[in-house]
Amino acid sequence: MHDAKLGGGRLQGYGVHDLDFLLEVFPDVDAVAAATDVGVPVRRAQDGELRRVTAEDAYALLLRFRGGGLGVATLVATARHGRTDVIEIHGDEGTVRLDGDRRVWWGRTGEELRGEGPLDESSTEAFKRVARNFWAVIREGAAPEPSLEEALRVQALFDAVRTADIERRWVQPEPVTSLP
Image (cartoon, rainbow, N blue to C red):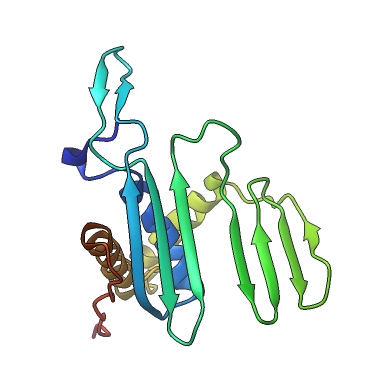
């Protein structure tokens, strides 16, 4: 169940990863607008009891990038049919799209989209990479990836999203200064 007392709903659980990805690809966010909602306000819990939902199960985020361009991230956890992650990046030179079947599509301006896949990546492989990186930081003194500065940038953007949702306005993320 989505209980606000437990720290938030889908925005906290999934939206932060959307923001992290967008910052990785487009590091300069000028401002963000956001809306969250509870689509199904009462749900049956695992114990069979009906419970009130107090944290969002849907969000829509709109990011304005410095230098031009917009980014959009949405999630509706109560979708009943075929909900998958889709990532699309469109620019003046072309398009890249990763669909829910783990196929990558790309094309330059004036070309048809070409595709390949499905990709071999799985969440298991991603967690293995995280564990290997963590081990290298501890054992070899390697620089942590992501860095604390990157994490703080994601948190600053997340805080701006929360403010934008509450105040219903565009909000600029607080700047993060370089760490020593």
